[in-house]
Length: 310
Image 1 (cartoon, rainbow, N blue to C red):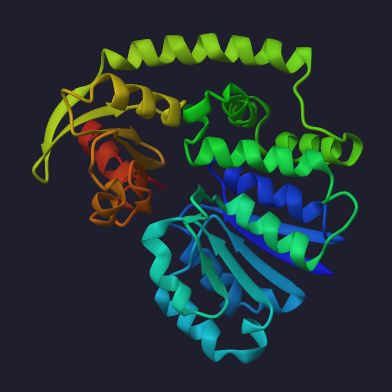
Image 2: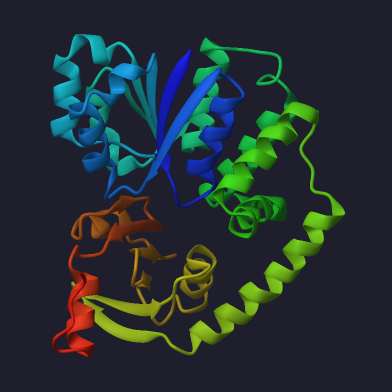
């Protein structure tokens, strides 16, 4: 069976479904996108007939919009070979479509894209490798870091699997853990990885300490927001600053000037609703939104009056 997987490119929860797919299917192609780009990319592949080349299409940790979902619902042949698994509660209304499953939590347990996808694969395409403890243990660590539930019991290993993605890069991370799941019975970290993670921990601490000095207080839509510009370690930075400055700011906005904005908070503010104002989505205390399309060009013009992107 040949499948095409669309998934989120920014974190372990988006990347792990690629590994799960490779452990399940003979041929796997994948396209990694952001919430702000998934609709355009999916529409292009649909209109160009690329989807016809696959036996099945999955979308994980992302969700398409109503317009595309309605088109698929009317296309009986396509509807029979596509499934969406998402866990962002802002997309809950998409459960109205027969091929879309959005579950934020179930049985008092927070879900993530990878955990929902693994459940489906185990129910539909069980195999010896997929049923190994190592696969479930890997996905559980991903779930803990993505839902921030690792904090409850201080499961520090969940942060390790996330940080290794940053160290290895997407392609090596996929290949490494694909081979790891094939060979191993249980999930673990070796001494070499722990050494790399310790170096990374020091780098993260130094980076956060530097960025804490650059926070900018801003009044935004009635909220007192701390804004910081950063391209690295945005999740760690946002979460740390949200906790540290919870008495000073309503929430923290981490702006990656070349990519997107991440919102982090600890107060009773639904940041997913705030992110919606700027075309974004997410969870109550962790959300994100894309940047304006022409932002980089506008910045260049501010610095160089006659400058423009070619």
